[in-house]
Length: 366
Ligand code: AMP
Image 1: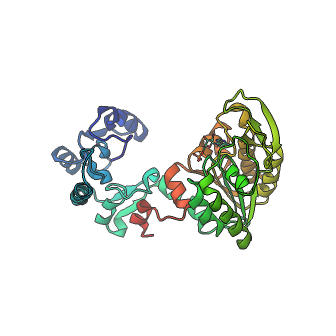
Image 2 (image 1 turned 45 degrees about the vertical axis):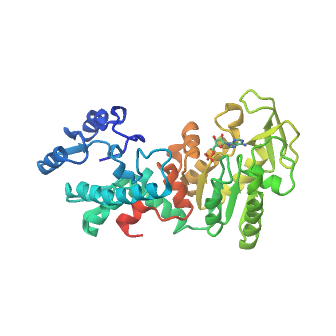
Image 3 (image 1 turned 90 degrees about the vertical axis):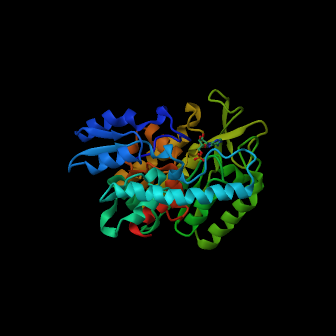
C-alpha cells in the first residue's frame, strides 16, 4: 500500500493502478491490484496471495481514515462539530489500520517522506505487529542511520550549514543544533534577519522583523555554548528579484537602498569553505542564495562543491537534506559525491528539529 499525491477523495488521477506496470517491471514479477485498499476485493486477493506474489493496494489516501482528518465538513461547522467528527474518525482510523494489518504477516515501512506523520499506514498499523514482525525498509533504514550519524553519534568538529528563505521555518532546527554543533553556518535569505537585528542596513533583502529578537537570542546562545556562528560577510546584491537584475557585491551590513542580497559572496563562501574542510560530520539544509537564478547560484554551487570535496578528500560524513538543498546538489551534479541525500524534506527537517518521528518510533520504539 502507498500514498500518491494528496487526494481528498477517490480520484483516478492519483490511482496506483497507473504505477502497477512499472512496479511489476522493477520487481520482475506480476503485480496484482485491489481497486480499494480495504474491503472484500483486497481481503480476498490478500488471502489468496502465494509466496513471491505481490498485491498492490489502491491509494490509501482515498480514505479519510488514513490521515485521520475529517473531510467534507461544512465551512460553518462549529468547534464542537469539528471535534465530534474528529473523534468519530479516530475510532474508524484504528479499525482501518487493523484491517490493513489483518492482510499481512509482516509490516515493513519504507516511506521516510511521511515518517513525521502518525497516519494509519505509517504508524498505527505497526501496533498490530510484534517486534519480530515489523521492520524498517531498506531506504528508511538508510535515512535513520544518516540521522543518527549526525545527530546522535556525531564526531567533532560537527558543522551545520543552514540556509533557505525564512528564519521562522528553520528556528526549531537552529535551536536544536546549537546544542550539538561546533560550527553553525547561516546563509541564504534567512541570514538578513540576523544582520538587520544587529543594526545592519539590508536594503530590500528578505527578512522577518518579528524574528529579530529570536535571531539575537540565537547569536547569544551560540556565544554561551561556544558554537562558532558564521554569517555571510558580503553579499551579491541585485536591483530586482530576477535573474537579469544588475549585480554588485556589497558589505552585508551595508546593502544600498533599492538592492537586495541574493547570493553569498566569494569571500563568504571562502570563509565557510575553510570551516567545511575541517569538519567531520556536515549537515546541509537550505541554499545560501537564490540558486534557481543562474546568476545568483554560484554561492550555493560552491557550497555543494565544498561539501562534496570534504566528503571525497577528507572522508567527512555529509548529509544533505530537507527540500531545496537536495535540488541544489542535484542541480550541480554532486548528489553521488556526498555521503547521503535525504529523500524526505519535511521528515528530515523534523528529525533535525530533534522531534521523534512517529513512523520510526512505531517500529523501533524510539
Ligand atoms: P527553504 O524552502 O526555506 O529551504 O528556502 C529555499 C528558498 O530560499 C529557495 O527557493 C531560494 O531561492 C530562497 N533563497 C535563498 N536565499 C535567498 C535570498 N537571499 N533571497 C531570497 N530568497 C532566497
